[in-house]
Image (tube, rainbow, N blue to C red; front, top):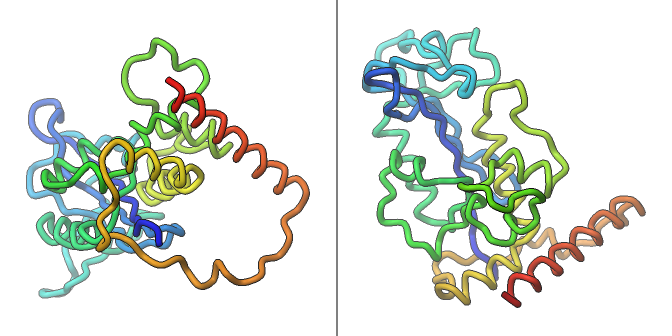
Length: 246
């Protein structure tokens, strides 16, 4: 058995004076292997004063009214390339997301603001895997000594996954959710051990059987891939051992 995990990431736009307050504009939820379970734009119920387009990739043109009355799944404008085709009211979007998250251990990066807008004030620590506050992931970053605040998802992806995300492009909430899930998966055994020691066992209703596919014979990985995987395992164990010895 292992925890049933789902990763979430939200994009937010600004309202109020200078757009300093945040409102949901997109929600993405993915499964353990990155399959998209929910990806929708959230129609703001307040007047947006800052779309934060450079970060979110959104602006007013991304939303349009359903072409026919009663359309349950209004579409985004054709100019909004790469964005989900589903636009929901805030209440419906939050309800759908929470239905998925209520049944799982939730993975994500710095979910404090996401949880606030999703109204997940009840979420238990034993059911949260936040990559921004994972000691093992943070210990693997070079040059973090003396820095305040959690590391960025971009920094963790570069260090642990050898991947470059964001860059000059806007954020993509599906990509960010998948990245957080990958970070969780590469250190899952140590992270789960840490959670058991610090809080408690994951409740049985949040566990699942391992996929039957994992028992099938797999093709032999290349020498370079096998070497990279071995190096990652050794590094993970060394970091975990150092943390346990503190």
